[in-house]
Length: 317
Ligand code: XMP
Image (cartoon, rainbow, N blue to C red; front, side, top):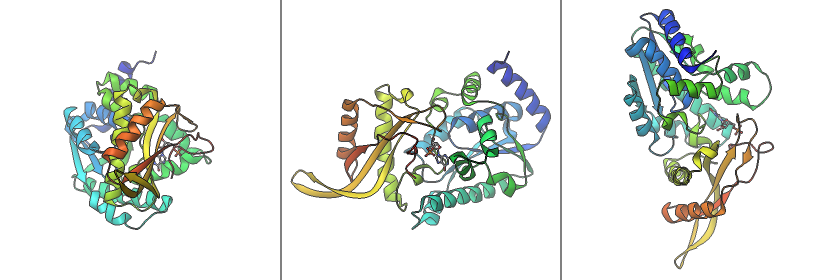
């Protein structure tokens, strides 16, 4: 019978044999898959695993510092790379969604490659590829192909001339979570919602500036923390906020305002291929909307997305 404990034991033993004294470099994203892959390889080869966590300036509020700390707490040898301004510079003026994705993907590979090169004699690239990723990358149709090509999966190995080690490539997501529990990775990491590689970059529906990122991070944090505080986070598969390229008129005290509109989205799904919008309680939405408008400078209107996938997608870009 398959059990997470046996999987961990066998996989660690195999990795030890396969990797010997070789060095491995692995990009952490803060997500479940890369975290579990890292912990497995870490159990096998310890300090010979070099983890890199890139701040692309498009992460959730305080995510970089928070996640970096919890990785260090797990004993991982992890280097946080602040590449925010490099991403912002390269993204300047780009508003087409696919163009933004391409820039974010390319700059990530460049930054990662530079960091990896500074590790002497590294031989392997560790990746958190799971079984559905393997299947999706050979199927020709469907949005997943495009998604993956922009994620950190496709481009890296080709460019870097490293052998690839993917200890999770026979597992489904729920199995990965169970393996993560067996490795004692905290629920804070294992239970998190999916988050796209291009991050807030595809939730700002126009060109990206640090100020827009700041606004969206604050809005997103109020929404996500609200879901957590009211026990709704685990009932939702994925949630987030979009900064719309629209200003609307409002009134604050006796001043007229002309500020940004944000859209909140929460969906229920099994695998992201189809999704239903979640009927969050009106009272909850009301509280969150008030909080956002009162606390986030630059936003004077909040709307809720009630579209399902298909025909809408989860992300707006
Ligand atoms: P859509 O918007 O296609 O999203 O319904 C389905 C799932 O995929 C995520 N997503 C991405 N993930 N790079 C990623 O790593 C991307 O470019 C990308 N686009 C969408 C999305 O967050 C959802 O979980």
